[in-house]
Length: 102
Image (cartoon, rainbow, N blue to C red):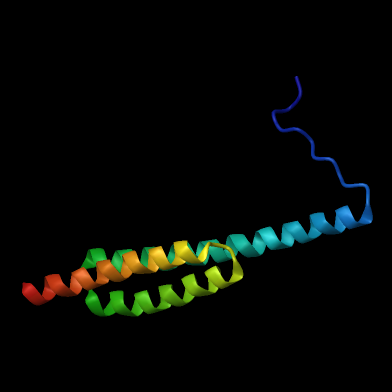
């Protein structure tokens, strides 16, 4: 039996080969940016869970910068970026309200 993965064919035309090379580079760049995004979101979430408002606010500012740059590049839709920023802001704000009332 053949292996599970079908063999990819190489494009015949020079323009197709160039497009394949560009796709590999673009995929690597986009993967790195998505990884930065996930890390930034996790850092804010960890700070919120720890209850550390100062760290959460600092990490939130960094996360907003990363999310905006990714939305500008078209990796994520601008509405997704806005939604994620809004949710994280709400969590940090709730953390501040919980510490103020306690």
